[in-house]
Length: 104
Length: 219
Image (cartoon, rainbow over all chains, first blue to last red; front, side):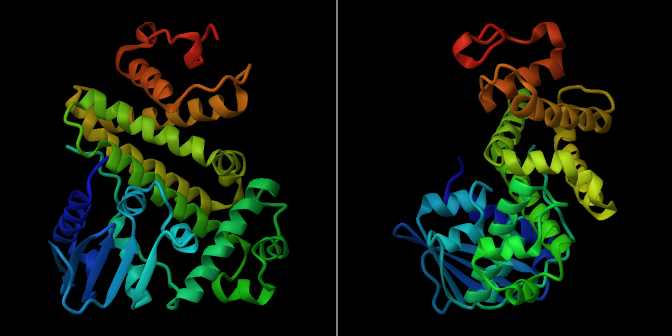
């Protein structure tokens, strides 16, 4: 099982290698996972990931680390997680949904 | 080396923009999956889906134009889950033989978890129309393409053909495990993966003999 850092690095690398996945997307995501926060910034087809909270996130996703890892690795459907309140979203919902495409 | 089963350049669906719409769409998808699993594609109706979701018929048409569209959305969603699972199950395994087995295990775990859906796809998915068949073919091609580099590492000649054979074998074994095997003593995904990897790489005589408790041939 990978850890959260590996998952975020993977998202960052995927956008670097396939910038078309994030074309036109400019957003700052904050992930609050079981007491630790991560920030994913996407701008002009480039992404950067850093540990810690964002200054002014467009969207904050809240989940336990286990649930987030299950979502990222395909063991939990994100929509099901949201419906079961295992995944909560604050801020721009449209940006949260676009994240699905970046996880593919 | 990883089993890269990602899809690039895929057009995203027109996604709903509010939490409420996302939940509604999710409820419809969940309900549709249950109805398709229970009734099959041809017998399932939009009325049964909205009834199972506890929504109105009008709500359905806000998100999907027809039954075919919701089935297609489910097919895409399930394919995404499978691709992610195989990718992450194999990503950090340096040994190609163990990576192959890890990918197969992820495949069998997915089939086991969504057995009713996979059963419907196996029975009906290819007989619905060309677009369903094309999506399923694309998934198999993506999975085969993901396994091909691992097979190359293992010295396999014609890795694309071999990978297509590998995926076909896994699909048939999964179907046999759940719907044809008698008596129905379940083999774990790990055992199925081990057997299939051994069969694929070393031939049938190399298949290990699992213990009866593992659902082996003497069980």
